[in-house]
Image 1: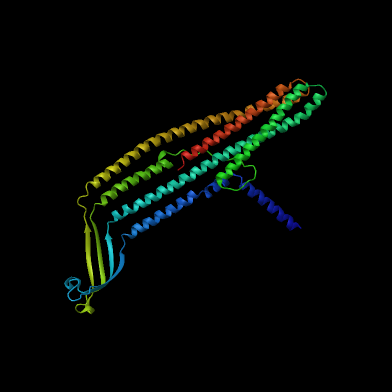
Image 2: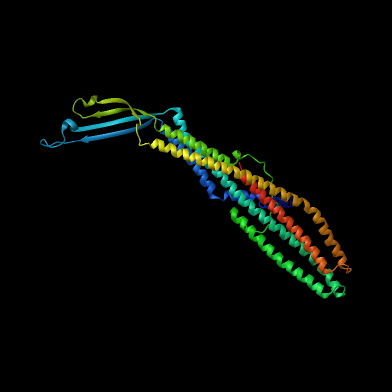
Length: 413
């Protein structure tokens, strides 16, 4: 019996832990990334680029090929191919080895283009992850704001329902006017209506959060408060945009080198061995080998080299223009977001004092309401002020978190 109770307790605690893990920000970020097929696609593109690099390297390794031909050119009464050319019949079976000669710098430049493509895809993958994270975090923050507003609405309704019991007695004893009580009742009913609207909005945003993350959770469990810290500001060069610009710069330099290398002499060596015979004389002796060298030297290409280099220079100029604009925009956005966050920090720091006095006023009015020293209108006004301060604080905290999330996305390395 004791073992059964212990097992039930363990399972209960485990279920609580799992539920908590399934309702925090990290869980939704992980699910959002796992459910996005783009990352699988980009992962395969990285592997494809690695295979392309191996294929390019293989082109400069020795290539072995085998070939065999059997030719018969019959003649009849002097009709047919000239036997001085065709030999009447010919057979060959050879094994050929060919290797293109290339310098280490040439090979390195050609393989470097694949390395840069791989880095570019990796950078693209990281940016895609950051985009998904930002979308998930933004929706999570919005959903949590709705949840907080719903809790505030529940708090106000519970307080009003408690006071409703007091006011009924006061109205019955004619301590307050019936019209004042009806005014209070209208406020309570309006609060109940607003509460249902707020609950519907929270459920809709929670459903949207699950949809974005690709989860099938249709429950309405509360989510925990998001923890999003202020990032360490990094220079433009270390950001995604700076790294992407650095890759583009290296691509342009490497492309210029490849254009120039394409006009260098290209040398290949080859060797073959096998059997080639026309069966005219001593066919059993026609086994042999051959060696050779081939060279290709471009002389004139209609100025294609010059035009290609001009195109590459234009691409480099475009890159520098975009780099300068992106760097300026990056610095301005970081400063703007920092200033906005600081302003919200100041507003949030002032709120506890407002809470203190507005809540004290509500409690005091609730106490004096029974003695008739405070009117129902003043009592409702103090509640409305308290509600507005709490709602504004929730909105300020939400805006602050959204700005921090935007800043995190902007300076993502």
